[in-house]
Each structure stands twice: as structure tokens, then as C-alpha cells.
Length: 150
Image (cartoon, rainbow, N blue to C red; front, side):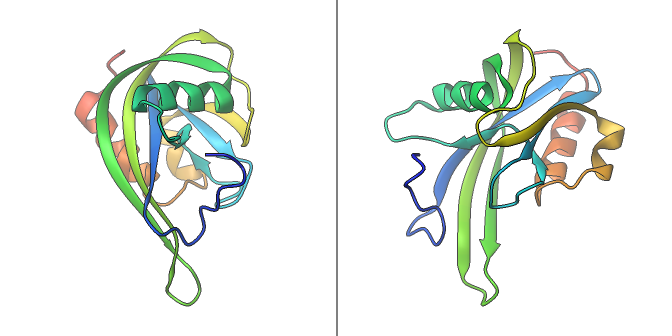
């Protein structure tokens, strides 16, 4: 989506993708550099553009946010994020498809709309300010796949 697209109060849910990049007991996380959820840590990812294949969207978003190239593997989770406003209206509504990914090149560096990029040990995740629901997704993926390399 371009910067001109208004994601607030959408007429329909916005389709997004996320990358679950595991390396042993660590996962790659990005700190959001823009609203909504400025300063929160999350998975690399973002909105799918019209005409863009899901795997291409993941690879593009990871590259834009982390400077890394990835091989996209299987879909691991479907996650829905509803963010109400103060009056109870739906300010944001995302349907997120999270895929397992493997780094194939690059050096982690923040870019695009990320403020920071870090490999975070599983045991340290609860110490971060993480976007709502993301920690639960990560824990399910670690429980299902363990420390497998992809």
C-alpha cells in the first residue's frame, strides 16, 4: 500500500503478512517506527499490495524493514488484529498471514518504517513491548516447530 492509503477505519479488513524468522532459540523482531503502535516490537511484515503474491509481499516487507533477503517457507499462523478506538469503533482491522522464513542474505539493519531490528532470545521476549497477540503467535510457533532451521 502506498503512503496515501488510509488504513484507519477501513471499509474492509486489510490483508497483511508477517515473517517468522527463527534461528535456534532466537527470532528476528522489528521495532515499529510509525503509528499505529509506534515503539512496539513485532514481526517483520506489512500490507499486501494489490496484484502482489503473498510470498513476494513477505520478501519485500522483510527487505524493506530489515535489509535481509529471505526464502519464504510454509504458512504457520493466521492472526486477526482488531484495534478499537476510544468509542469502541474499529480503528484498524488486519488479517495477518505469518510465514516461516529463512535468511538467505544481508545484514540486519532498520529501514522503511522500522526503528530497530534485533535477534531476540525466546526467554527475553516477555521483556519487550510487543504488539498485542504477537507473543502468543511466536510461542505457538516455537512450541510447534521447536528450534528447527528452515
